[in-house]
Image 1 (spheres, chains in turn red, cyan):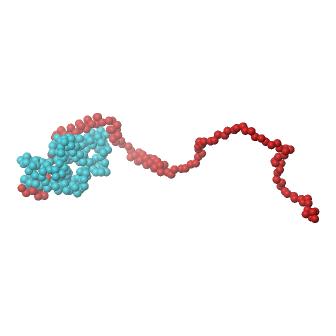
Image 2 (cartoon, one colour):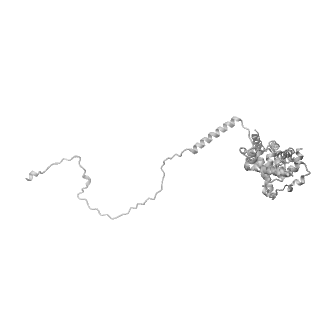
Image 3 (cartoon, chains in turn green, purple):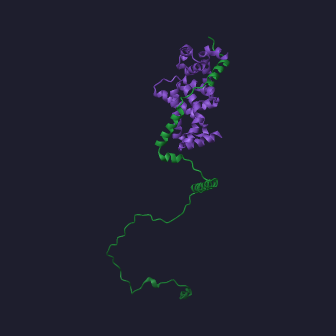
Length: 137
Length: 185
């Protein structure tokens, strides 16, 4: 038998399309019962999560603007360059312990109580010749 | 816009709005049932698939992403996946492509439908197609989807869909040859 041509096949498909299969009469009600059963057993937070709420348009726009402003501020804060501030901190270091020990030390007695503290530099020098070469000649 | 309306209805149905769910069901159930019926070949199985499809939809409404297509396309894809899950659960071997099937039309279920109505014969011939060709021709010919929409639902590119459609039509030409004159008259 020769295969169908395009027109014959299209006619058959159109014919089948015009006689679509029908579901059983109680199918819709069965699905609705399944929906109610599922809704009864689903957690309340899930229903609450997906429940739509009505808000005035002005309030919605205002809320959106506030959220945008908060987002902008938060973004600027996060993207701001870090500020380097110098401050003094205490750093523990290991210190050497100073130990005082008694030791014998001999001191020479000072002559006549003379000390170099009395020898201060003079402010002005006044040289005076007390003997001349001519005196020897 | 239908998409916006579908989104709103889906959100309301997920929140427990019975009327919204009923509206969604009335808008999409017939097309989904036709697809499920053509893929499974059985009314009971098709009804189970469609019911499961709608209950899953409202249980996980966030899985539908309107940016990726219409709700109808998403539901087509869900029906397709559910049918495949049923096949796998039943342990049926999936004859996905031509090479897995005997190409002899005499072995098709059409033999038992020779005395039946033409629409039944067409359904039998479609049921005898490999699964991927079957879903392509059902979505394209019966549901009126474009090549791109079929490709999106089937998860492949339009060229692959075109190839599957060609092979499906070739097979249907031979399988339905006895009915050609009857319909054209």
